[in-house]
Image (cartoon, rainbow, N blue to C red):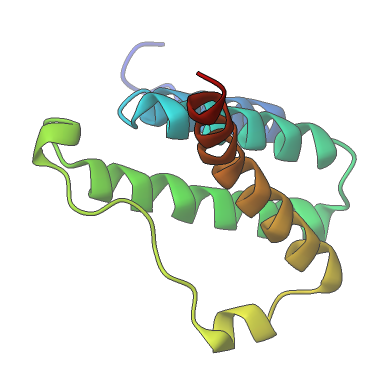
Length: 127
């Protein structure tokens, strides 16, 4: 069967698992605080979309694939020491395209990202 055998395409669950693992591996190149935040957000989102409709699943996979490509580009070929600035600014037009749930998730992400800074400041004052 060797060379003539057709390569079988991945099933949807296999593609999801591959993308998920790829994203978590990419996060290893982030600063520790961002890695923890990114990993938790990724896990929550993949869990939240486990029962998504086929249309939602397609959009979900495209957006997370775009995210993985963007992180890979930002980290650079040889890791964080060769990377560009991490992240991407959102413009007003980006925010206008978000639904209420996405705005809420963005706010939760903002809170989680700023929480360690707040706790650190409070801890420093207590000393």
